[in-house]
Length: 227
Ligand code: SF4
Image (cartoon, rainbow, N blue to C red; front, side, top):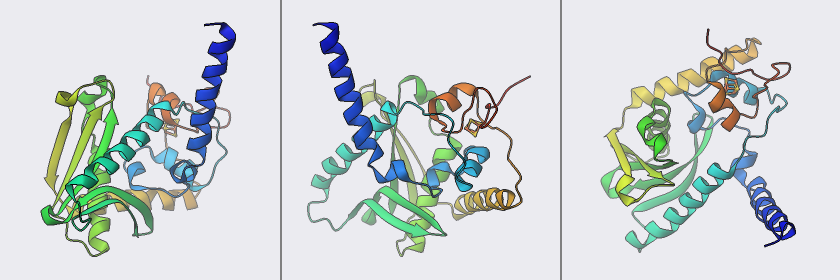
């Protein structure tokens, strides 16, 4: 294959994926969602004040995560042929936060959130932030008339096998969800006072995922520097 063909195909694929991704609602989201609560306060602060972005993280892994979610949403419909037991990709709003749950199984009163990672990333599963997120989904479903009793996180390693799928389940705990809402409220109050939260994430995380990472530190955020 010629270099010309290689360049053509690279541009075709990356251009098509980026164009499709930029048209997605999730990419355009400016409101704070449950997945961000309990993460980096400074990142949430930047989003709240609509600060100019200083970095464009590579999106391929999040695109793959989105594609896997869509595949699962389609696949699990066969286990609810009449569509009366599963709420799949349910859009909702509560406590001033927009969200959509991956899955709520009514007869089990179970909230499920699918996660994608790598085999190396499995050792961080589940994170406190992921637990907060799924507890918030349960809390929001409750506020919308459902009656959740349990929450589950299910993670899939993109470079793994079925045997690498891991599940974490625990009881729905309104207190955990409330602590997440309080966390967000505190960041909002700080933002109205012009108090900029300290960086909370290491450089490798920031470079990979934060639109306000700035290696110069002149406009955006330098990331958490130790020492
Ligand atoms: S660059 Fe890192 S520390 Fe700074 S706001 Fe973003 S995630 Fe937080």
